[in-house]
Image (tube, rainbow, N blue to C red; front, side, top):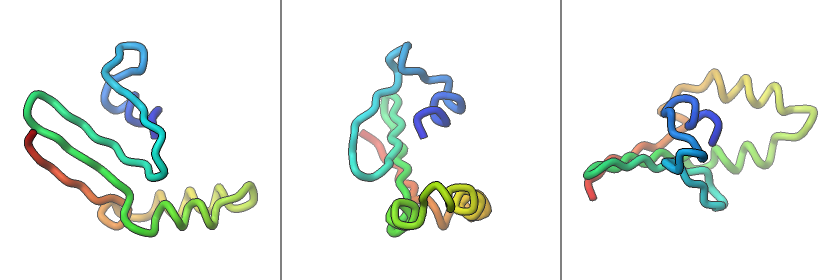
Length: 81
Protein backbone atom coordinates (compact mmCIF):
# COMPACT_ATOMS: atom_id res chain seq x y z
CA UNK A 1 0.00 0.00 0.00
CA UNK A 2 2.77 2.41 0.93
CA UNK A 3 4.66 1.78 -2.31
CA UNK A 4 1.49 2.33 -4.36
CA UNK A 5 0.78 5.64 -2.63
CA UNK A 6 4.36 6.81 -3.14
CA UNK A 7 4.30 5.92 -6.84
CA UNK A 8 0.89 7.44 -7.54
CA UNK A 9 1.26 10.61 -5.48
CA UNK A 10 4.97 11.47 -5.82
CA UNK A 11 5.07 11.64 -2.01
CA UNK A 12 7.99 9.82 -0.43
CA UNK A 13 9.18 8.84 2.99
CA UNK A 14 12.46 10.61 2.20
CA UNK A 15 10.76 13.93 1.43
CA UNK A 16 8.73 13.61 4.61
CA UNK A 17 5.38 14.26 2.94
CA UNK A 18 4.11 10.77 3.79
CA UNK A 19 4.02 9.12 7.18
CA UNK A 20 3.12 5.64 8.32
CA UNK A 21 1.25 4.67 11.48
CA UNK A 22 1.02 1.03 12.45
CA UNK A 23 -2.69 0.29 12.82
CA UNK A 24 -4.70 -2.87 12.45
CA UNK A 25 -6.63 -1.67 9.38
CA UNK A 26 -5.07 -0.18 6.23
CA UNK A 27 -6.28 3.42 5.86
CA UNK A 28 -4.92 6.13 3.58
CA UNK A 29 -5.58 9.74 4.51
CA UNK A 30 -4.62 12.56 2.18
CA UNK A 31 -4.70 16.17 3.33
CA UNK A 32 -3.90 19.56 1.91
CA UNK A 33 -4.45 23.00 3.40
CA UNK A 34 -8.19 22.58 3.88
CA UNK A 35 -9.42 19.26 2.46
CA UNK A 36 -9.12 15.66 3.61
CA UNK A 37 -9.68 12.44 1.68
CA UNK A 38 -9.76 9.16 3.61
CA UNK A 39 -9.81 5.79 1.87
CA UNK A 40 -10.48 2.63 3.87
CA UNK A 41 -11.16 -0.96 2.99
CA UNK A 42 -14.84 -1.85 3.26
CA UNK A 43 -15.93 -4.02 6.18
CA UNK A 44 -14.89 -7.60 5.72
CA UNK A 45 -12.30 -7.10 2.96
CA UNK A 46 -9.25 -6.91 5.26
CA UNK A 47 -10.58 -9.82 7.36
CA UNK A 48 -11.07 -11.91 4.20
CA UNK A 49 -7.52 -11.12 3.03
CA UNK A 50 -6.01 -12.04 6.39
CA UNK A 51 -8.17 -15.17 6.76
CA UNK A 52 -7.89 -16.58 3.23
CA UNK A 53 -4.40 -15.58 2.08
CA UNK A 54 -1.43 -17.87 2.52
CA UNK A 55 1.48 -18.91 0.33
CA UNK A 56 -0.72 -21.24 -1.73
CA UNK A 57 -3.60 -18.78 -2.26
CA UNK A 58 -1.85 -15.39 -2.52
CA UNK A 59 -1.93 -15.29 -6.33
CA UNK A 60 -5.59 -16.30 -6.67
CA UNK A 61 -6.66 -13.86 -3.90
CA UNK A 62 -4.68 -11.07 -5.60
CA UNK A 63 -6.37 -11.79 -8.94
CA UNK A 64 -9.80 -11.88 -7.31
CA UNK A 65 -9.22 -8.52 -5.58
CA UNK A 66 -7.86 -7.03 -8.81
CA UNK A 67 -11.08 -8.01 -10.59
CA UNK A 68 -13.31 -6.32 -7.97
CA UNK A 69 -14.60 -2.82 -8.58
CA UNK A 70 -13.28 0.00 -6.40
CA UNK A 71 -16.68 0.62 -4.81
CA UNK A 72 -16.85 -2.89 -3.39
CA UNK A 73 -13.32 -2.65 -1.99
CA UNK A 74 -13.06 0.89 -0.64
CA UNK A 75 -15.02 3.44 1.30
CA UNK A 76 -14.12 7.06 0.53
CA UNK A 77 -14.80 9.99 2.83
CA UNK A 78 -14.14 13.60 1.93
CA UNK A 79 -14.12 16.51 4.33
CA UNK A 80 -12.72 19.85 5.35
CA UNK A 81 -10.52 20.52 8.31
